[in-house]
Length: 197
Image (cartoon, rainbow, N blue to C red):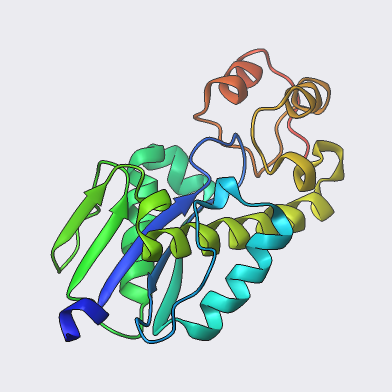
């Protein structure tokens, strides 16, 4: 039974945006305390995600977050930064999982067995839980970025390349939270638009 208990689900939020960190979460659920309503975070509204995140933090056997910041994303590339954030989340768990289940098709280098599951965030409750915690944590960081750089409206689009965000980028140039290695930001830098911190 113990090997069933100590299985961690891992997922990330923030691979696609032009700004902000990539955040990963690792969650070991308690089979004795199932959480109803777990699903891929992208399929849930913000209020439902917040509610479930509270439940996960209260009911899971263990959970932890890991992140890779913008400088690491630009230095490593987004895939390697994502794997780094996942590794950090697993390392931060207060228990050592016997196995890790990761959403997607790539596993981070870990000191325990790992299995990648495509669409795991929709089919594996522990991965769904990790998806929710990662999304809620990253959204909170983007709201803080919005307070520092309100001209980009990060609170609304969370750094994703929406028409509003791209327009703000063209008008104001990139800020320190933008990923310089991502094509729309790199293109603006090549046209010598001023960077305003």
